[in-house]
Amino acid sequence: MNKKIRVLVQGTGFAGQGHTAAFRDMGAEVVGIVGRTASVVQQVAKELDIPYAGTDWKQALIDCRPDVVSIGTPGGVHEEPIRQAIEFGCHVFSDKPLTQSGETAKKLYELAVEKKVKTAFASSFRYMPEVIHAKRLVAAGAIGEPLEVEYISHFNLERNIPFGWSHRKEDGGGRLNNNFTHKLSIVTSIIGEKILSIMGEVRDDLGRAPIVKGIHNFKTRRDFIPDNIDDPTLKWGESNVEWSYTVLAQLESPMAQKPVSVMFKHGGLHPRFNEDHIVIYGSKSAIYIKGHYASGPLYMYDENNQWVEVPLPEDIAKNIPNVEGDTERNWRNLIKELISDIKGEEVAPYQTFKEGAQYQQLIDLIRKNDNWVDVSHLQ
Image (cartoon, rainbow, N blue to C red; front, side, top):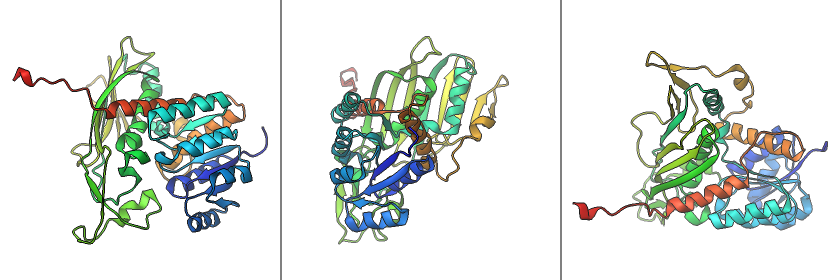
């Protein structure tokens, strides 16, 4: 396949615009963009120099005849556009979550397999340079046999971020959909892709959020926090999804004789005391990566019982996409794999709708929150 791959983008906000730039950087041609509001999609198309702008997704598929569609809208509205695109014969790149439930996500994966289209699921922070470095070190036996992983993050998000899709379970909101998916992908890339067991609890620490009009970009929503949160004329929306979670998992690892235990802890509305981090403990040593999404630096526990920073290998450093923003860089890495796969080139395994459906089913199980054992009779 020598011709440029044609891409149709759905979504005019941060993700849709970011996908557009990423696909272009990877050599694809963005032929159209679709949004909910005509004036907004027309303005974005003009700013990004996209020839086609529309509000009717099915018509856009007919008009643009894309090879690939890119989905950059909230997860609660992914199902039907993805289904239509697959039926149309398009390959699909989708931001997370894949859909609002494990059942619907599984159906999309099965349809993609049936129609023989390629898919990519953007739990893409596994492409962080320090994650790639850690994967290499673990595979080389640098920590011995991996035994346990500890993954801690505390975002301390402002409680009064305006009400939107992230507050609604049915729209693909919640920290499991928009934080845990990345963290799970990071750990499985280092330890092993097979998830053996999982359990967890979730909490909605927020309760409600102010309703504010005029927000079109998820990344800038903090700018719209009302100056006077006690204004009696403010209207409020009720959150119905988790902002904090604790998850325990067991992964199979080709480097370990026994399942590797993993603890994921996320406080969405709590201040951090120590740095967010990932620690991979082994039988001989350990690896520590600073940052909630492994931004680095990376440290090794040495023979002198000291944590020593390990520089990023030159070959990993030189392959980092030259663009600002971790999210934007990671989109490019995943899109590069998808495009190469579509062209029939040899590629490393990457996250597809198989993982997207699996992750959504795991999230459904975690949200049941039914793992507690009543021990009140022991008091």
